[in-house]
Image (cartoon, rainbow, N blue to C red):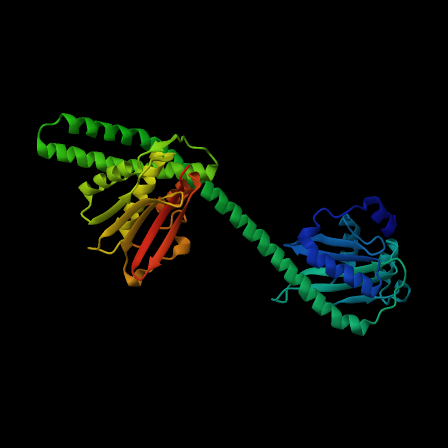
Length: 390
């Protein structure tokens, strides 16, 4: 069977053109320049050789060709690093090469090695034609090294891209598994922590000893903090997995909710908190989520604020928005990177938390069709939560 018959038998569009696009373009250009009908790029993969790209200049298309067609040619003709130029098999000085090419209906043949930066052979660039072709060998000897380098670079880039894709897929799987573990852990901890909180509330209501009542209150407040962390993880997992968490919107007295949150902080923190609230109306929102947003922003100010400096809280209605802002001082040597503040699992220096507080707060703002603004002035940083008033 002739070379052309083999081509016609298996001729079809190449199905993965994008993967070899650069090499393909080089092959097309070279076929046109040399006036060879068939161009072939072979790639070495370990001890094996694969047809990376086969191009038929007459039909102007990339084709898939069974590599068995070329095995015998390569086994007999391709020897080491020396390029091969045969313009007419009838004048070929090596009889066995001429006989082999004629067996496949070929009259002219060119083969050039593709070397990597370490001067190791990584492929071959070949051109074939069923008629003799006149070409200027001296020009090809100048052109082929350049084309070989370009194809070798394309090989390297393709390999690196596949490697990076594999790493990315592994990281995606790791991230997904990590989120699943966090969700499972938070889900399993949710009930026992809730029970601890309820029991501490019950004890606080029924104990008569003042010291014991204070201890019970501390247990309640600590369990509330733990419950908040668990809720943050659950909210984080819900946003990652596309779940819709349980939410109940209602008209909420924000001033009362903020005071309740602040009263819990007073028991376990001794920072001075300056409050200024002007809230003439209730705000339609999810009470539990808004409470967590307030807790997260205040906790962030306490954890990362400069020691012995007060925290300022403002809450008011302005231009159809409910605004809750928390301002604290920070050390000038620890200027926050605002681009990273709302990324999950990025913790501030010295923080022992999970790094989810601000991320979850941002998600809570989105849930309410709102946003968070960050303003830095001198050594002050302000987080401003804005929620549209319906």
